[in-house]
Length: 345
Image (tube, rainbow, N blue to C red; front, side, top):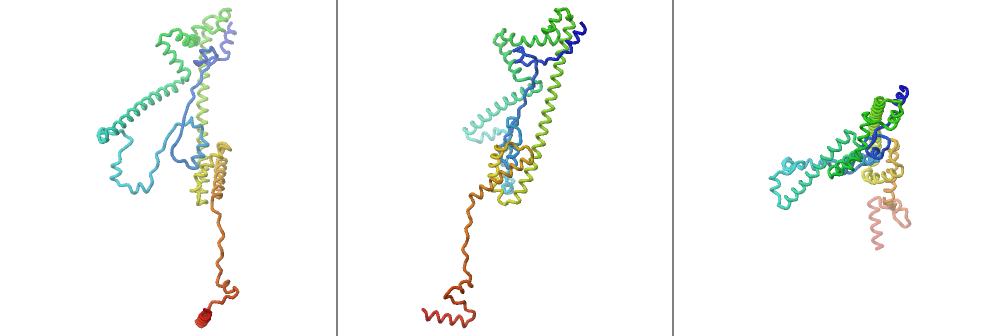
C-alpha cells in the first residue's frame, strides 16, 4: 500500500484551471494575462525614424505618445522677455479671473470642455488602477469576466446561475485542501489500497506541486520576455546608429539630399513592403540605399534636359570668312577702311 501511495504521489502534476476550463471540466491550467503597448508620434519623421518604425514591434505593443515641436532659433531670438511673460501657461486650467475675461459663449464652451476632460480623466485613472490590479495578481481576462458575471447573478437573485458558475471553483479548492478527493484517489480509497488521510495528503501535494511548476513556468516566461525586449532594444539601437552614419555620409556627398529626403522616405516604405523589416544593420542600409537610388532616378526623370549652346564665332573666324576684311591694326588702316566704306556708300 505504501508503494502504491508513493506512485500516486509522484505521478505527473496537473496544472490548475482557468475559469473557462473549470466551467468546461478541462484539465487544470493557469495562463498569464497578455501585456499590451502602443506608440505613435505626430511629428514629421526623418529617414532614420522611418527605418526605426520598420524595425520596431507591432504598433499595438507600444504606448501612444506625442512630442513637443521644437521652436525655431529665429523665433526664439526675436521673442522679447515681456511677450514670453505675457504668454499664458496652457499646462494649467484657466483661473476664474481668466474665464471671466472671455465672452459668455466662449466661457461656457471652455467650461464644458473642461468638464468632459475631467470626466474622462477620472475614468482613465479608474481603468488604469483596475488594470494594474489585474496584472499584479495575474488575473486573466476570462477570470475577471467570470467574477463580474457571478456578481451580477447574485445581484439579480439568480442563485442557480451563481452556484453553477462558482461550483467548479469550490470543487477545485476542496480537492486542493484535501477535503474532497479527485476521482482516481477516491477509487483507490474505495478499493482499500489507500486510507482517506493518505489520499487527502496526496491530493494536497499534487495541487501544491502543480502550483509551484506553473509559478516557475510563469517566471521563466517573464524572464524570456524581458530578454527578448532587451535584444530588440539593442538591435534597434544598432540599426539607428548604422543608418544615421549612412545618412550623414550621403548628406555630405549629395548637396541636393535635403530636396530628395521626403521622396527617399516614401520609397523607403515601398522597399520595406517588398523586402520586409530590416533583419540586420547591413540590411537596413541596403533598404535605405535602394530607396535613395529610386529617388535619384525619379529626380533625373523630371530634371530638364540640358541643351547645347551655339558657339559664337571669334574674330579669327570672321576674318577667315570670304570677303571679310581683317580688323585695322593702326590709325592709318582705320582711316583707309573708313574712306573705302564711304565710297561704297
